[in-house]
Image (cartoon, chains in turn orange, purple):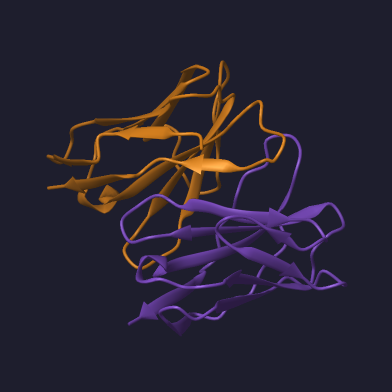
Length: 117
Length: 111
């Protein structure tokens, strides 16, 4: 099946710094990717929809200036957590839809565990 | 997206069939039923999806009631590696529709 690569798998950073997470579709093109976050023992919460070549669409309550999304190519979307604070510590997951797949399946990355000290 | 209701948790013995129910009583005619699962600390994995006919693939079977208000995911011979949280999601196909996760069912497969 299609592969979505997410890097890094885990990252530890200091408060006030910025962290960039990459999401790549390895063997397919993805005009649209999605970013989720997940707190321990909770479900995935959709943060934003990333569209290649245009601005991302953020869900209600998600600060667009804090969670910067860039989708510059059909195989890469990045999420940058700016001025990170301990409350941003979470598991971040991206997903992508294969543009050529009529079955509408979404493929997910393996996630990034962010810990902010 | 229509809301789904799933049991919080279920247990299953290894080698037996695991039947995971999902209620989606407000599903619209153009909404599909999708099933994903998430093994601990990993990204979700697609399992199966369907509109109104029963579906089967190498991972599981999906049984959708005639009125489409509920469905059941069947893992025919559960293994320990099937222990995961299973999410039932209804979603309109076509375009670039987002996937909204509910709370899911935590399935524990025991020896």
